[in-house]
Length: 313
Image 1 (cartoon, rainbow, N blue to C red):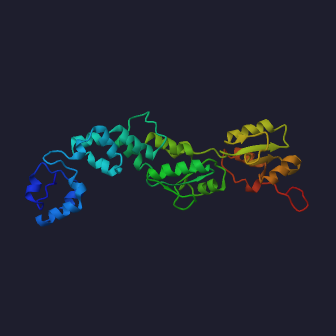
Image 2 (cartoon, one colour):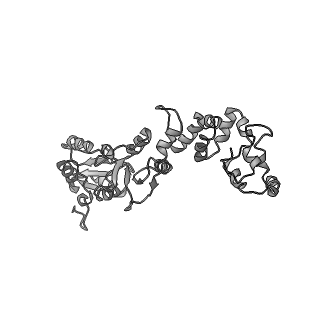
Image 3 (cartoon, one colour):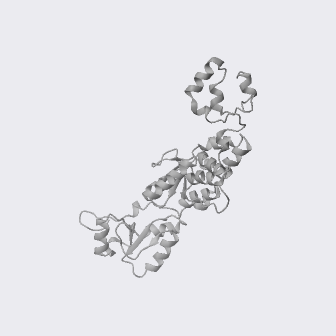
């Protein structure tokens, strides 16, 4: 196929035995006869793609499985262009195994349970997160790298920092200063759980962020001290706000130690909390959030500290 360009050699353009790629056509555009042999000598690989006296190229003479394997090394855009060349190329370019590798490059967790791999499935996810500038808080390193690679492969942008361009904050914990700063943007930055990302990827279309707003204390692990009669009631409030209640204080696990007052806190837990840099927070922090209907409140004003004499502030 010569694309109907009349400036090519007439005998070359009218012969059905000559099948060329677009690059070959571009190279020979308006080329004089005396330069033809010299060009062929420099590009022998192009000539070897064609049988002498055959109506099909050597590429199309390959078995279907081998042809699909060759096409696996082409960029996706080139594979899509092959769909419009001829029926044989179209059959090869629609090979399911070929598109499985392309779809898995976008999302390694795709199990194809809801449909076979193909150009439509790939196209649905290729620009799925176009316009999304995402960041995260409290994600593990391996999980963050997986999220970042998946989001950028599907047209989104990633920034480890919260900026004026950030549109979505993916939370593993909703009580962090970063999450509070995102909420202060008054809706410009959506605070969502990680499930929003994977549900969007699974469906192949954007889902509403309102369904994936995190609980106020999601990701927090709270322990208490000095309130034996109120422990069960406090546990219910803590779990209703999305946190995990823990009987014991654990290093690198517990995020807050809840007390009625610093004087009522056990000395052992108090020393451990200071050594492990776990904030000791007044019970009023939880009570005020429950009273306001689960609105997130910064715990900083509720943190118990010591003055120079050692008494509670």
